[in-house]
Length: 128
Image 1: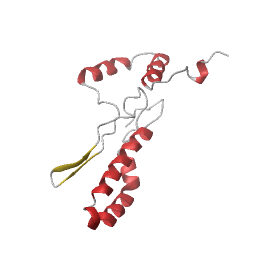
Image 2: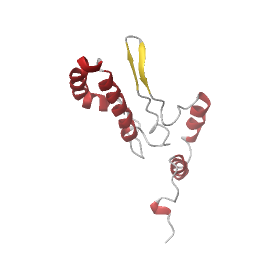
Image 3: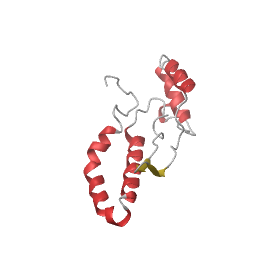
Image 4: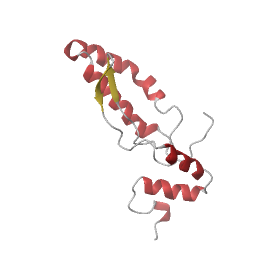
């Protein structure tokens, strides 16, 4: 919780959007309960939370931004499951990432830029 995220994002990046939107999720669920058992509302809520990850997740390396994995389970059955846009890191990838935390900020910025698939240098590095 005390970690500062120099490139943006925050701790509890999924919890806060859930608290901010739970009442609208529940209203939509109640409105659609008789029509489809609330399935479409739960799918929409899961997708919305996944979208919020792209806004609120820490951006240091860029790997969390597209890691949202919306799924809905009802009565023990999976009724919706969309894979994340970017795979979850394996144990070896997590270990490698942990070693990168001791790199100079400029190099971490370079890594972030390329992970995000930017095609040109950041504005502050463009040649004039």
